Image (cartoon, rainbow, N blue to C red):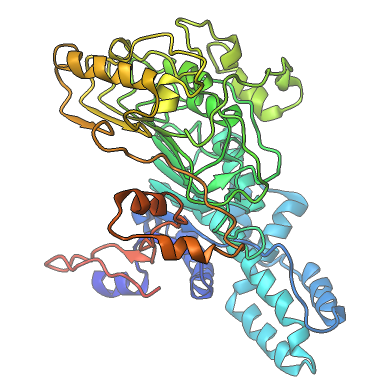
Length: 516
């Protein structure tokens, strides 16, 4: 067989997607190809998993036939599936766990699919078993994705939708070195997506996502550099809020459009050994639970101080609600209760919590002076976080003294001249001295024209006040600004389709984008 025809028979993908039903049909033969010819998996650089299991399975009729199908599937003989079984043995799976994996992974084996289709056609009430078949097929996609992640050694980027216990289990084991061999050693970037479940994933609201718990899937990997997520918050559920510091190579952390509190964000900042870029913003969604999570500028300031020599870019937009002080931290021995915490603590250095960190400056109700953040070139921040929101408490520093000489870009959100006198005096002093004190500053925003802070939206299920809409004037900058800050935020659509490596046959052909 020629190289060209062989390439056509076995496409070399650079991006794999697990999202739609058409994707699921590709996974079983792809797994066999990668087991039999491991070099085919070397081209995969990106892995997109956007496939939640529904929080409930709806049956139109009785469940007796679906239960019968499930009982039959649970005892299906898989003793002859030697190829997949050996692959799972190599991953350290054994006993009933391995048998369960083999059974789920062979759900889409062509012979099994054909037999299932024939049986479904014979069912008098096929609609009674269809929900089970759909659910089982999506479950197969989870197991297949987990195995493919282990079979593709050159993956650099993962986009993962929260909610797959099987993927999280295998990634966590790999992250903590509990598999016979290491995997994902070239992974650089992870994007965490909240669930798109129709009940739990309404994207008009902040959606539950446990950032620190998911961090345990990849934070120890040697090449990891970047983690990002958007539109998330506790949503009334418990979140992991303890994590030993200085144990990850993460350089960039982005948490956008989030209502997480600093009980989560503080430990997140400190996970990195040398953080270079940090973004934490709120707004654009509705908080279904109401109220606010505690967000303390001092906690953020002390956590960032750990990275004062490496930080280059900081973007914080949380002035919608900030707290004067952090809640008292419980002095618990998490190592005795949490196996993963214990493992991380063994390689950690420095105080375990921000409360135990020695204060090197006065913070008051602010993020504190950043004068010694020697690498900082870009700072975007709210005036309240920077200088304090409380009218009875002055910032314990002058603004011009609190900014590093390395600064090249400064954006201050929420400042309105004449609204608060103590802000005006700080800004006036800054403007007079900035040329001498900040010689590298090239861009300054938010002084002459107000840059709005981010805000959460009102409940979108409630009717809007029609009179307010009629009173809006498109030519009024103030009204236009108000409309912008309450606009519902949704992520931009990105191309995540399967992508093939260019094929070389005397000349390079363009990478083909397979249809979504």
